Length: 288
Ligand code: ATP
Ligand code: MG
Image (cartoon, rainbow, N blue to C red; front, side, top):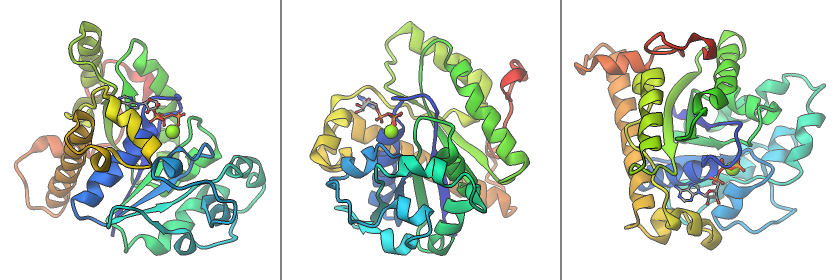
């Protein structure tokens, strides 16, 4: 059964969409069937993969409202093993329209259930808000990938998200894990970036992924050509870093599943990684 990963951070512009597109493309390029679901009314993931606006195309809004199945919404992309369920600006209304409906937090989970066996990875791009759409993504997901920029107060910004994840674990989705925190638009040459990375490592421990994503103009240009970076310029640092990120995540999952099935990989950190949320050093408890 595949793994569903929500790329979430309620802060705007931290690299969620760039991460969702390029992680999914890198997974597909590694020959695993991958589905990318655009859960953001801004539809940046859809346009970033070259889908022109089309009011008649079946999209995630139709799926969440029960007007279409997730199967009917699938679009094959330029990459052989990457599929997309596109978004639509109407999705902004779903927050209100779903308020009184039954199982309103489970809409996405229920809709994706029939596809789970077909894809090894399902990547959900979330909007920059802790709204009902993000909630649906976190309830549908097995893991959360949190893109963050290395700046002061980075932890304060993310504590609301961590609280939300904790609440969801306590009720709607007990299996939800933090699969990783990835530093985006990272400039390793600055002291500030180094200091913040160090602080985040103390807090998140092994959940802070080793791969960092540098600021790279190719990553910003690629969506205007409707392509993931690895199709637009595979030799760019941006494309390379997301290929590395996908590899790191794939490796962790293989290690974790071998630990789970009792074949110890000899890496205790992987077990620590599977632990529920909370500060790894016990330093700053209020965000957990
Ligand atoms: P929103 O919260 O609005 O959904 P987001 O978190 O999805 O935003 P992105 O759209 O991925 O963030 O990125 C914000 C802007 O920064 C975009 O213009 C994107 O092209 C650019 N960007 C993202 N990551 C990088 C990077 N590593 N290097 C250069 N530019 C980047
Ligand atoms: Mg976005």
